[in-house]
Length: 112
Length: 113
Image (cartoon, rainbow over all chains, first blue to last red; front, side, top):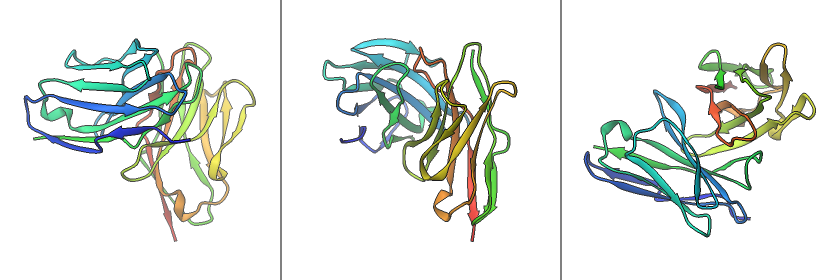
């Protein structure tokens, strides 16, 4: 079975721009979660989607948004990028709550 | 609210020596506990998880962890370190009913030849 895939793997943007990251979960998984990883703050939960509905949200500003499609693929969008948004963005999928989350390789975003 | 404390940011051991990475958690509900490993430029890989079954959990690559409720701990051990074990290791907690994982700061494991 193919693992979680994330595209693109690397991205460079400038302040003020917006960016969209994509995540394809493991086949059959209906839950997708997003995490931000930075050297200073570590791994922080952004949000979780299950069957196209946002089920949980972390403490991030409204510039961070996401959605999930009927095939369980998910996208996250960051508008009006700031330097502090530079991070590794990780996507994880699971069959549902109480199930193990499997992580993708991440998208490394650099904001200049 | 849930939280994880991983004391120390770096552990260095010799090849063949015991590995012990400490993790303490705080949770208002029975926790689900996880150890994930991250190699450079990669995502997170699950080492093992505790979900209220056996308190001693065996994972991949020879790692195991013991859930101790009285100590609110879930320390990761491996009897004999291998060079390939060098990586960053994260302890995480969830409530089970909520998939959100709360991670510790992570511990970098170095293995000396």
